[in-house]
Image (cartoon, rainbow over all chains, first blue to last red):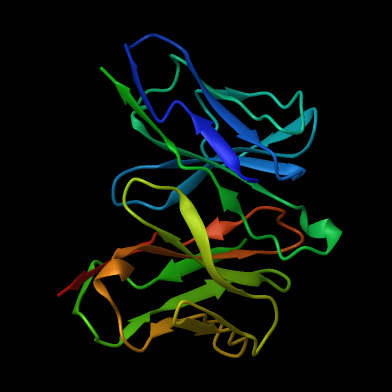
Length: 116
Length: 112
């Protein structure tokens, strides 16, 4: 079945360590996104990519990095520079609007990162 | 820029009650509007959508109508079930922005 796979589902990290969250999609979507969700709050955009080898900062990019070397993959690295990384991270993909799509997002199941 | 304002929660209802969750927006250009639902511990999934004024999106008994004159997209359901307990997000996207804008989410709890 087509979809978005995020891994790991749960991750624990010590302070000062970098960690990489995986996001893979087999929907053949050009655009991919990373969101952060904190308890009781909405979604905040970290980074997004409309096409391979290109990505843009979202609203809260500081302390995070991404790469987009393949259409199917958009990994997110949470670096030691991120002051408060404990959160639920959501990856999403979509067909870009310029392809006359409605722009709806397809989400993965999420990765919960806890810094000890 | 674009913004979405959702009715603050949490909302607690008894089973079979009528549900309304308000959503208003501001947008540059002509947005497509969405409601997403998030069940505990999961990602979001699309509940319904509307792409132009006066369109009505519907799914699983939920409905929302794209009202351009009031810049609103209120979510309604005539009779909620316990299984509808979740967080509901209103969202929009415009061609010029290229990325979605979400409301803060409204937590719905339905009691038997």
